[in-house]
Each structure stands twice: as C-alpha cells, then as structure tokens.
Length: 315
Image 1 (cartoon, helix red, strand yellow):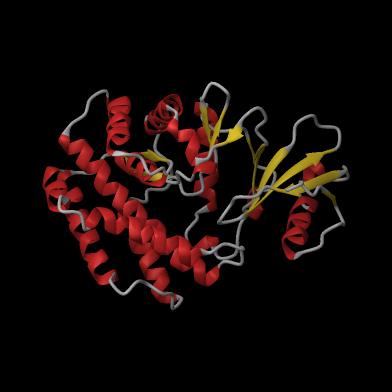
Image 2 (cartoon, rainbow, N blue to C red):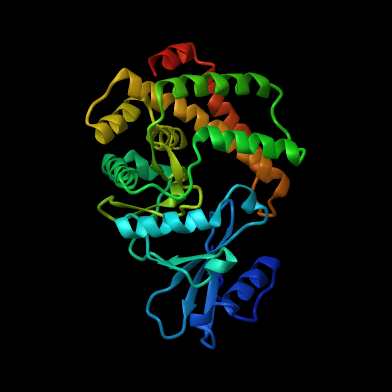
C-alpha cells in the first residue's frame, strides 16, 4: 500500500481532521509547512508520521483513540517514555503536545518494525531480554498497576459498558483468582514493566538489536509478567521459553518457569477483557471481538492444562 502523504488542509476523514487540529496547536511548528501520513498497525490510537519543513528528521505522532482514557494514564505513559529515552531503550520524546495527551517521538530511521517471524531469531530474543532487564532495573515508574489491577479494571469496565464476556467466564475468573492468591502468597517482584509485547512495539536493526516503542501500558508490575506476556504473544515453544528465562536470569528453575507460565495466562485474560471493552467503545477499524476470543482461547490452553495446579504450587 502506498503511503498517502497530505499537507495541512487536505484532510478527508475525521482522523485526518483530528491530527490536523493537533498539529495546528504545536507551537514549535507554528507557521511551518507540515506534511503527514498514517502509520498503520496501532489498535488503540491513530498514529502518524509528520514532516516539518526545514528539519531533516521526521516525527511520530500518537493521537489518543476514543475512550482510551479509561485504561491509559497519559501522564504515566509520558513518564515511562521519558524514562525509556533516558536509559537508552526508547526513542527521543518531545513534550510539544503533552497537554493534549498527544505523544511525539522521533520517527526512528534504520530500524524495521518486528513481526512474529523476527522472534524466531535467537539474537532478537536475547536483545529483548537485555532491554527488559534494563527497564526492570530502572527507577520506579509513577504508576503501579499489577496484572491483577489490570484484569480487575477491565472486567469492571466491560460490565459497565454492557460488553460481552464468554459463557465460561466464571470458570476463567475462578482460575484467575487462584493464580492471584498463589502469586500474592509467594510475593510479587515489582519493577518497571513494558506490559505490551505486540510485535510492532519492537524495532530491530540488521544486527537484531531492539528498541522498544509505545509505553502507554507501562507500569510497575511483576517482572515475570513481561517475560510471560512476550512468550504468549510470540507463541514460543517450551524450549524457547526456557531459553528466555535462562537469558534473563542466568539460570532456570521450576518456580521461575511456573511464574512465567502463569503470567502468560494472565496476560491473555487481561488482553481478552481489554478487547471486549474496546469492542464497545473504539472507533478504529479492528475486529476486537475476534481478537478477544483468540486471547481467551489461548488463556484456556494454560489454565485448563493438567499441570495448572502444579504450576500454582511451584510458585
């Protein structure tokens, strides 16, 4: 698909009119010729590449999607993006439109957006573990939201908007409560976490080194959530999951493997319920119902496994 680059005043749809209104209020760009084009792939917001007359680099501009304020704290997301820039795992951040809730970064050149295929490469996986360790070792973020907070929030929100949950959700929720009780009894290891391992949030270079983008779901959370969520999102085998744990921790143990596995299931429950909320409130052209059904199905593959109780006891 060819990129459709437009100039200010050429908007032909609501999303384009919205981004033009945003750009018109950015003081450092006032009076300068601007061009913009959509960046496809986002499922929460509308994303744009913007060129500013007289500047060599271009910019990535993220305009909040309708209703996202229900589950995204924009100030916290901005703080996480700033932290990522400072510790060298995220692109440069600008505060030009902070008051509008709009995030602006350098548009990263020389790197490609990842797909699941990229994670077949061991060096890419190792680079992600390095980035995660760097983030997890950074100072705490201003927002603490564990996976329990996230799931509880989304379940309540789905009920509030009259959304649909699967017929067996009572059983799924019971397994979630079992996992929560077991994890809380074992103790949580709370650190700054990325929380959003969609393939498009990883930018790679030819050597396989990784830059992380999109920190709007970042919060202080259990470090094993990041590893488990990544494993589930990329459909990693048990052998690759073990490799991740060894790369990150330098060792493999039953308790850590169980912790990662349980968080993998919880990640799918979180994103499944998030999808059911988005299905009711979002205006983006995305099949949230199918996405949520798929996430629930993957969660069931773990919580209904014969080893579920063994994993909980191993925590």
